[in-house]
Image 1 (cartoon, rainbow, N blue to C red):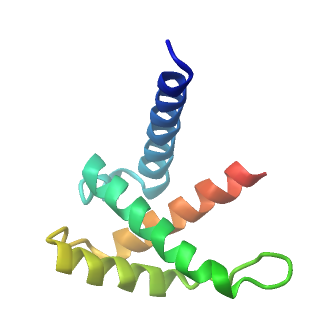
Image 2 (cartoon, helix red, strand yellow):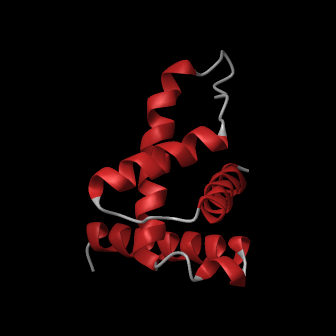
Length: 107
């Protein structure tokens, strides 16, 4: 197996761990609100949003993140792109889960 194949496989494994973490975090009652594709879509939109915010990082590299703003961004983008609609409260949990996963990954 080539190095590229290994990297792709490792990336897919990490993505699967992330989705499993999010499903566990949001709880059984919210799992029905999101297919696996929905979660991948939301993760991509969150990361895109955070990338845009990165220019506003303080001297230590920290970004002031408002989860409600991220959720509104996902809702607006999803509507434009024909995704969702998503339950607002469930989406708040999903975004919180994504941020928590990334924070744990950094530690």
